[in-house]
Length: 139
Image (cartoon, rainbow, N blue to C red):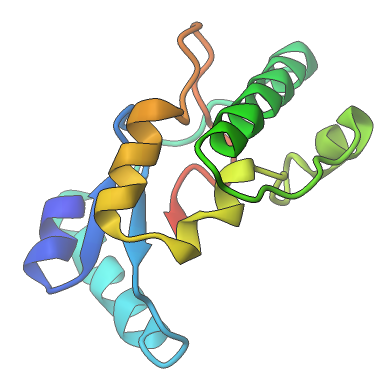
């Protein structure tokens, strides 16, 4: 998908863990054109595989991982919002949970984003992958 979108002229960076991708410099005016390009690319390469639901213990583990990632991002000098409570995080899982990466993705270049992901990876090293509805971040 990322190759197709790059060929169509979009600034796309794949998540190093293969969980999704980010799109940079997408203005509100460009969103309809991007959505159309993504639809065409999906027709060419096929839809992404269905997400595997996580159980509550796995979601709690993800929350802990994101708290650690928040500290890592702060250590890199970024200003990161306060996290929600664990219960609020659980409640928001299906509709778009909090992530410290959302506080930086719109304010950095593609190169900085890659550096951030190298220093503070978005994927856990455990067997749990990020299968949230936000695995593909479009910014």
